Length: 305
Image 1 (cartoon, rainbow, N blue to C red):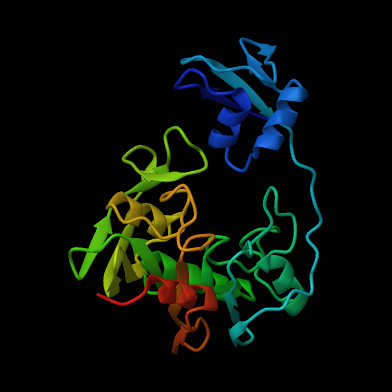
Image 2 (cartoon, rainbow, N blue to C red):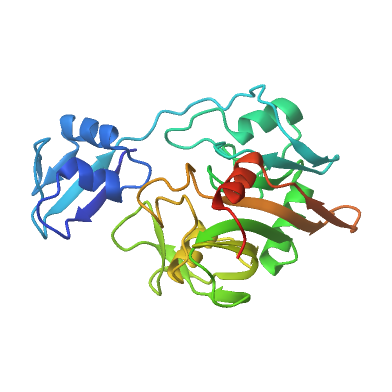
């Protein structure tokens, strides 16, 4: 069944395809143009022209056809496995790899690779499109991610996420020099009110979010920090650090609009993971080295202050 969403233009002069690409999550500009060409973008019940320029207050109905189901197939994609047993597998995900299939990324994901390595021994609690996935990290974030090989392990790890006993620590480079050696951002996160591709600190339709941070090193105009999550909201570290005036280096969504220091994608790495093993009850603590791209950025930043 097709889905309809409704949008209102806040400003005049923006082309309709640009508005759609900016506000409809997962929709590229070329995909927006195809919707317009197919007569699926309506204003006052009539299809809009492809070059229509919005007026402030214009209301649009966007009809999103149901995507065709793409079979989820195992793919022989190399994985950097940090820990594995009969219940869990922990992978050091490279930057650029999507965790599970989504619009625009039907395959080549971590899930495809896990299916090839683990076969049918992945938890089904996450649904048929996300077997084994307990938590996610962004495409352009590197580092440790845990998957469950059975429902027992998945339920136990999900409970640890809920009570914050599953500890995730990240390292990042942010713009600007932090005034304090450490701090906490306790601010709710929800969908951005006008840009559906972004999250924001907001009181409306939001969920609690807490990020603890501390300075590792300071550079001229930048700071290398460690972050510990209490919660796991979408883009949490990126949104929280931007909200206090220190967006991540290389984060074009919440920070600079153009590349910095030759880096593509945000400088964020999931470095440490601590959890209680779901079956043995023993603590497991894992750590991975900073990836080459991260070390190159630190080198380019020059001398510490």
